[in-house]
Length: 298
Image (cartoon, rainbow, N blue to C red; front, side):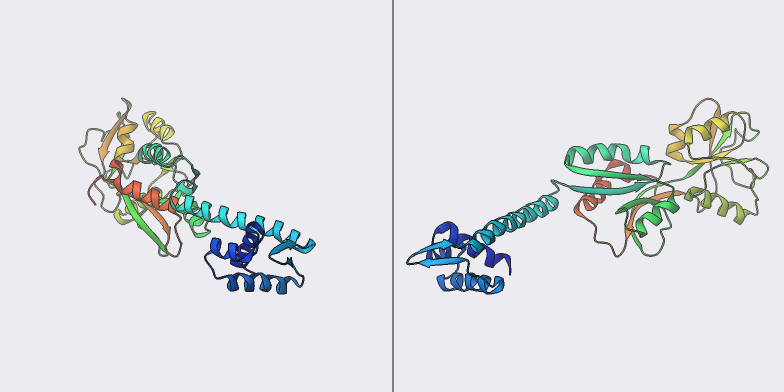
């Protein structure tokens, strides 16, 4: 049993005969007759009583006709829904973003995306990089904003590259420096992000290269709180340049960090084997054209 057979049967009933139905479905009369006979053979019961040039539904035919209408309507709904998906009239964008920097980078993009595709549902997940990678691998999200380098098994599209800034209390002896490195800060307590944030790994790896063992005095997932802790003199922190400037206030000093391989280079990643839905492809296209997709030279 297939949908073409069902449609031929339905049109025979609607049009009142085989020749009329053949014109509607663009088939020969014999093909339509064979389709109805095939359907009857599959169901094991006659569906039509042939009364001269007229055809009347049997009791089984009434059931088959009613069910066929439902199946054909479902088929039409399926095609319409797929077309809407292809044309981005509907769909679901499943995206994961880290708490650090996503507001500055993506808030305006979300507004543009919503105005461009108002009927696409957005499902936003916020985690640190490690958890976002796990969500990607599990297929729970289609895209995630991750720091480079990106693990094998993922494809990615670069979004922005920002150097790190050291965030010092204005009372710090080095607060007037024009550049600073981890050797200079070896005796200063560090304020880092919570476990699972990829930026921590970059900072700690750079310290290890310099032979510096940092003394971590506090951790937080909130940039505002981290900056407040720095201002209160609890330690020094490290933020991407654009975030540091956004959170600057009189109690802190911002100094460029003179350390290689510590740039905050963020990208949109997805599973290399995944078939990205149109809603996700539209987000990637928007990221390519959006002003915030360009930044500090790579």
